[in-house]
Image (cartoon, rainbow, N blue to C red; front, side):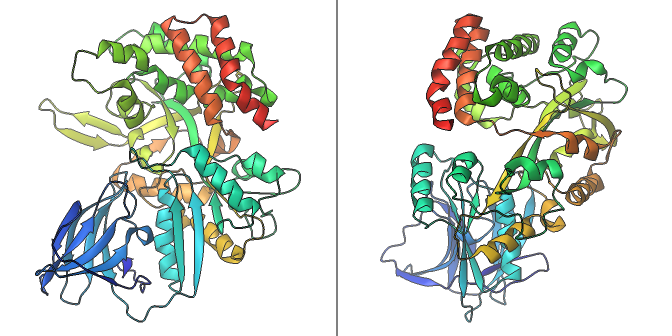
Length: 523
């Protein structure tokens, strides 16, 4: 079967397998009626297992596996299927909701004559909505080329391989010349791969001029261009034009504003107010100063934590450790659960009218809904109206004012790959306006036209205005690739400093000790 979104269609490559079922024992999942035949459809949803759509006869003697989730939009665990039914023409209809709440109606038709001429292999550490949606579009354009997408780390507890094991196995494959056709670098050490000659120079393989220059420079060296980020995460702050001022442009200014807030609304409010959330929000803009030239800078770390701790105290934030201690005798979720479940910006609080300013990691055009205005009447009924915001880059300790972004969904080609032409075509499809402006993505568009189209799509239902030039702001941001090991070392020491269990000197020593091995590996 193959997927068809709305009025688009494509033949299928997944041919049915048959499996005898002596007893009708169904895995966890959803059942959909087959009104035209003797049986029913079932979409399995067992934790840690691949999702499949099967057809069972009512007698329970035969199970026909129709579709493997790895090939379709409903395959990722972050999606859900609410409704399914079969039509008289034999097609199967599914309503699929992605992780952002966007629902899409898909129609699948079985094509018995479908043959596969080639396979394009894609590898990433974690799930990517942009890759998944691009695969769906690719299937329509290239019905004879199957995309095999491997996601090595899952969020299902107890089923995920460790990051270290996955990276080690990947490096072994790359060194042996047995890598995938397309590699998504997010979470991987690109510098190490480039030094070892494991990645292909993409400079002359296509025209990449549609991508913003600062984004394109993320993985560029003097020797070449080794990855194309198809998405980004911009760290921003903002508010209504009548409420913003120059204090938003420095960490010290934000801290002072939060401490000095008087009147009906606070300057900023965060919920849940976990210290670790605030650290992850403000850290990227200062990470370059804290780890300048691959060396830990105690003065920058101390300056950063002093201002961050002022912000956290004003927000009433607790560390995970403190939260857990206070919740020991209650039914509250653990601090770790709150940390992993919720984001760390406060755009929703701003949208709800709970504060004057927001600080956010802008990683999806859909978040621009929060730029509008949500109003409630005396009975609590909500209404939406156009809102206007002024945006600034979220500041760091260096006070440069340029701000930072993280390149995401960075696509690279392993050296010596046999399907490089197809892989380049897939990257270009990810960069097309259709994909960059699609709903439900987990990245911000990296092309100017893609961002404009995406924001226009949001404005159709949730109108808003940006008073200054968002394109100019985003184009001035500097790429930053925070190392997860170094960030964790800094986060843990900072939280202990905030709780008072470490002094500033002891916190700096703790960061140095925890990061020593990682820094040595990067030399």
